[in-house]
Length: 274
Image (cartoon, rainbow, N blue to C red; front, side, top):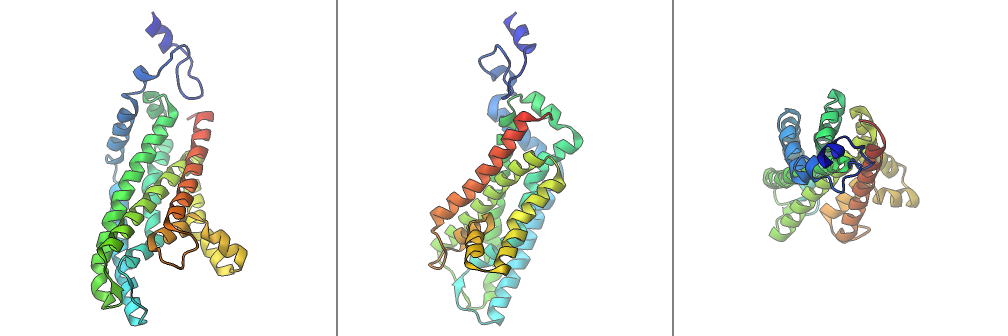
């Protein structure tokens, strides 16, 4: 009798059933089950494979080009990892698309309704998507960093230095940056629910606005530029004495942007119909 009453109950804002103190029997296996479902859905379509292949290809080409220009212009010796780091200005959008389609793809096909029925705790669905996108993006970033350093060593031709500790730090930083961009994207996608809207927000935030502020110049605009996500990521990945704040602060800045997007997406997800 209690089971029947629970099944016929009304969900509250979190997706819980009225009169039921837990969501265990309605959570599709809890968070682990939700994550497993998202994993299966991610790899059942072609978009993630295309995004990952594009990310690795662009990282390799851009790193080779960056190293060649450094040699031609006789630039000072720099860390080898700067080559793949420089490619993030483009490659980050492959990560954006990969993370975005995990959300907007379901809204386009209306299959998100089924997802929210299988996992009634709505925020659990969002959290599972964010975690999966972050893990995949982190792995892609670390592999891309290693690939970029490998292909750029020869064209640098003495204009880059290799230190194992520095290379490892930049590799992990690049992967971490992509992971936080993925979380930011999932939050923005849940807020807009449309691919066009999500891309507009992310292209503006990660490229158009930083480029505009940097071009206009001025102390105030340059200070604002330094606190945007890609700028913080660049400071984290490159390091050095000329950055405006240390790597720990850069991580906090990136985490704050990702958390703000995640909470915005959560707020709107709980208050709008699928």
